[in-house]
Amino acid sequence: SKFYAIIPVCVFAFGLAGAAAGLYEETIPFILVLVPLMVSMGFDSMVGLMVGHFAVASGASTPFLNPFNLGVGQALAEVPMMSGIVVRFILWVIMMALTSVYILRYAFKVRANPTLSICYESDCKKREMYNASALDELEGMNKRSMLVLLMVLAGFSVVVYGVLQHGWWFGEIASVFLYMGIVIPLVGGLSVNEMISKFMEGMASTLSAVLMISASRVISAILTNSNTMDTILHFLSGSLTEMPKMVSVLVMFAISAVSMLLVQSMSGLAATMMPIMSPLSDLLGISRQVMVSSYVFGTGALATLVPWEGINYAMSNLAGVDFFGYLKELAKFTFLVYIPFCVISLIFMTVFNFT
Image 1 (spheres, rainbow, N blue to C red):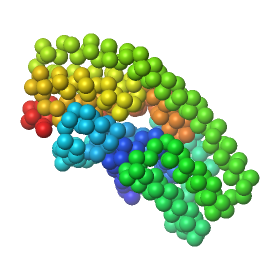
Image 2: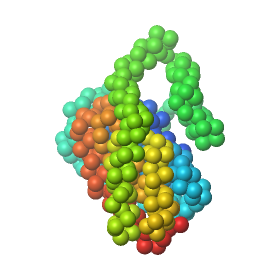
Image 3: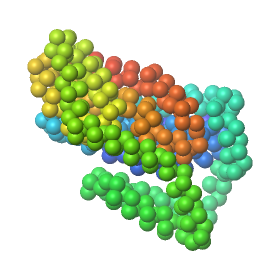
Image 4: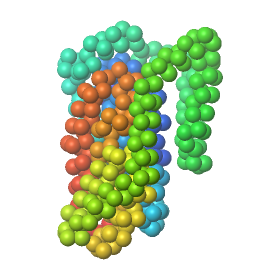
């Protein structure tokens, strides 16, 4: 049972990173820790991937503080910052609990019958490499290993502090990771040649993901700068004035979900949608807080399912999991858990006029 307990603990931890600080891409390196841990405990690589990606993605899209979608959305919609935080926190807890249950059901299944996993053959090789006794070794870690672990935690703490307090972004975060990548291996006992070799292996494994992410940013820039997104949103929102409030809110959610497929930026989508949706919600008699929620929930509905999202490809590649097999599992989670949760939450928000 102690093996299974680590799954909800990790889910809530990564979900908190997404919901509070808007961390997402920054969690990619954690896959290199989660996958060996889960495989060593008798699960498969998919469990490690799900714990990291499902949690941080759903946490970032059902947030109570996330500055990149909720913060920007509330500011542009002229809704008081931090408003509705109690309700949003409760919804986040429910979402994390549902995510944990979903992953636990899968974990129970593959631990009982490992051959059901799409990673079965590759995980057999991984177990030989990791050694099934890896968990026992954690208990007897030497001083050097403990120092390395503390330095890793300190490094990620600096990243979280910088993002929250000083608005750090890729440049600053990359700098911290660069120092960690140089100092920590040396402290851990690797020679300079070994460190460089490991660094090159890591770069090779992420190169294809970097190209995917770069391509997604180019598409986003073209759609935004050409005003194509404005045209699409204006067309989609034109018919909302003829619909009941509850239906209109769900249509706003759907519009946000579809638009996020193209924009692939939470803050960019807010800047595009809020000028249209805010006055429209006033005309429809819908609370702007509810309208912001429909946009925020929409940012996580479909965007993770497309190959050009980039982050899902990077994580599945690092985990050694078949990309399209992972997309299938991610789609099941999205349509069976995430979207129904969002729809039910938005209905309750509309009925009780969440402000």
